[in-house]
Length: 144
Picture 1 (cartoon, helix red, strand yellow):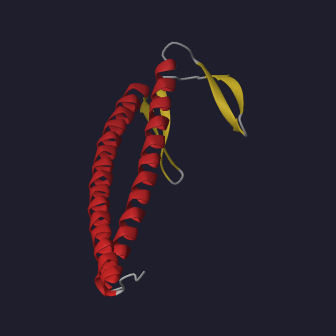
Picture 2 (tube, helix red, strand yellow; picture 1 turned 30 degrees about the vertical axis):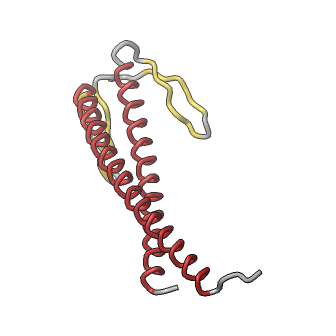
């Protein structure tokens, strides 16, 4: 196998790895979006009811009542907490969802472009393999 052919096979492998990493990134983006939407829904729910469920771990929760449902405490860094108005947090989270949706679109476009390169490269490799097979058949004709 010549060096150019080996390089094409390696490029195909790299493209496949890129697509896999991009799909993992998409999955992570989807999880972040779902988490933000769930948080927005929970904060919206505080407007009609002060009752909340506090996670204790391992799927266990305790019912509690929010003392000040208009204020949300956000973690903004290692051991750094910030108190913000619930409506401001909802707006911030909605903006984050919009940004993540844009990022998701960019990642999807990159996956599509990479998949197009994969198809193109596979086609080239198939043509080269067929040409090699044909040359081999011509060099070694079958005798009956």
